[in-house]
Image 1: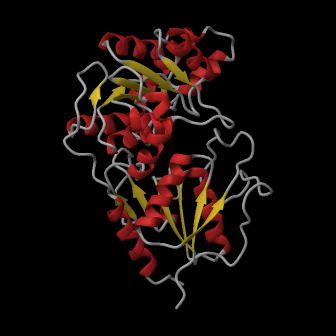
Image 2: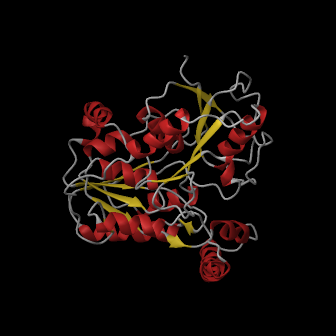
Image 3: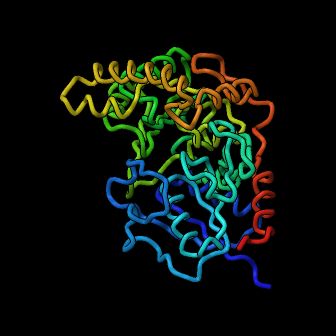
Length: 362
C-alpha cells in the first residue's frame, strides 16, 4: 500500500511555513510543497474564507492539478481557501489539517491545531497545544555563530539585541513606541546594543529607531533581498533580548534557546484606523491617538456581542511566558529561564497521524 500523499501549501510568510513543516516532520510524513503566490494586495487583504483561488496568482504559483492529495496541511486564511478549493475538486476525499482557527467554515476542516493564544471554541476537530510550533534548530544557530563571530564577538558585554516586529490589527508599532523602547533599554546601561527590524516594521518606525539610536549601537534594516540577514547571528551572540510583543515567532525562537528575554509592549491602536486617518494627511501622532481610541471602544463593545477584535490574544501569551519564567516585562531585571518551553509538536502530530489512519467518509 502506497503511503498517503500529502501537500504542504506554503506562502510568503516564513514563520507560517516553518510551523507547517515542523508538524509534518513531527508526524513523519513525506510531503510535497506547493508554493503559492498571492495577487497584489492580497498579502494584506483579508478575504472571506471560502473555497476559492481568486486571490492566487496561478502563473507564478506551483501547479494545482490532479491527482489530488490524501491530505493537505497548511496555515492561514489565504492558504485555507486554496485547501477548501482542492477538497471540493477531490469530491471531499482530500482531508484538511489547518494550523490556527479560521473565522468561518471551521467544520470543513478535519483537524485544526490551535495554539494557546488563539480564541476558539472547543470542537471535535480542534487540537489544543501550548505555544505555536515555532523554534529554531540549535545546530543551525551554532553553525551561524562561527560565521558571525567577526561581527559580534568583539562587542562589549552584555550584548543586548532588540528584535522589532511591526503593526498588527489591534496594535501599532509607531515611532513613539519605538523611541520609548529604546529609552528603557538605555536606562539598563552597559554593554552593546544591536537592533534588527523585520519585514513588518513600518519604514517610518525604522527611521525613528535610526535617529534615536545611542552612539555605537547598530541598526540592521530588513531587506527583501541582496543583504545577508544577521538574525541567526544575533540569536547566537546575543546575551539578552528585547522583542516587540507582536512578534510571536521571534519571542518563541528566543525563548526556546533559553536566552534571557524581555517583551516590549506595543501601543494599543487599531492599525486599519491609523492607516485610514493618515491618508487624510493627519499628523502621525494624532492618527495613532485616534486609532488608540478606536481600539479602546472596540475592545469594550465587541465582547458584549460575543466577538473580539482579533482571534489572537497576545496578552494571554505574554502572561503565560511571564508565569513560566520564559520572559519578563521590559524594564524588569532579565532572568535566565530554568528550562526552555516544551515542544507540543508530538501532541499535534499524533492527532494528524490518527486523521490519516481514519477512513475517508464517502
